[in-house]
Length: 371
Image 1: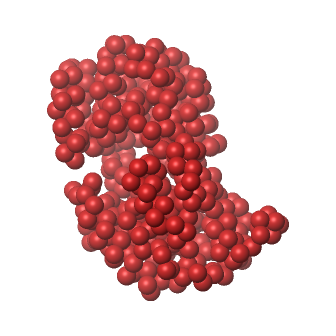
Image 2 (image 1 turned 90 degrees about the vertical axis):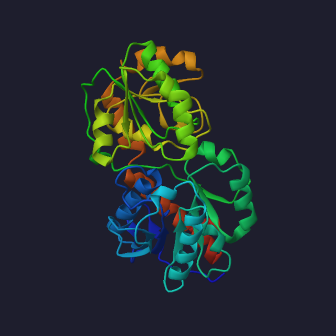
Image 3 (image 1 turned 180 degrees about the horizontal axis):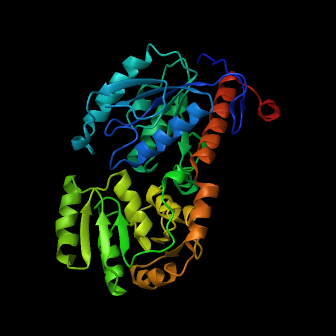
């Protein structure tokens, strides 16, 4: 593989003499930043904007319009195929078009946030780093094993990385948000909130049961468009509907912030090993504590008894809600500002980029440390 010429980075300050030239590949289903649903797109948009602020040159490849500060935007779809989310073919088409567009790009590295895109990494003259935004086990893990040394992976939590320790991990970088854009509110309404997909893995039916057990109304906001989501809604949510349950639908960026800020707690009763869970840091940024199961990355994100309450069984959720309502909103906000700001995430990625390019040059660990 051809080595890239790059000036060593100063962590937190971008490039010492010049910025890196980075091709950033986003998923094709939503614009950046997304108008409504789109967790990965929120992270990628924040990453792009902060990298540009630090002096890097970003070529963003995505769908629809560009709402980021990327100096160059290359579109694969005039309109994002959001209605086909969950289908494989749109991302395969996106990857093929990205491969064609990248042929004319002069960059130091490619940072891919898609599932199909890394299939084109083998034989490139510049290195490819992939952020794994979903599970790293099962068929997905087998995909990355088959790609061998053609890519290096970034995990978004220690939990995700530990689930498949044999994969070619480069670093762990937690997701982050632009904290200042989230309204902080101390006085809360007497209402609980569920914000996420209507999916068995997210288990909003358990959120309804827990809120009802403590006499709290609950608002459920999220996506319900894929067949599995619609089937789950009919089976588990519809029988639980009542005057204390409000189905909000998909919340756009402004609506989401208002819902998070006024809720007395966010219920996050996940029933799978979720690798991150962006909504948790969004809630805490608004001063809203999180009540969640001890699954996936939850213990890495929520400080039990300080910024939320972590439990193991559905029967523990009502008491957890009561405890969470006594927590200090200021602690929630401070935790996100300290650990999950966009600035800290980008510093992590800058260090990962430098490590990757040092490896490409064949430099020793000692030389990398001295730089």
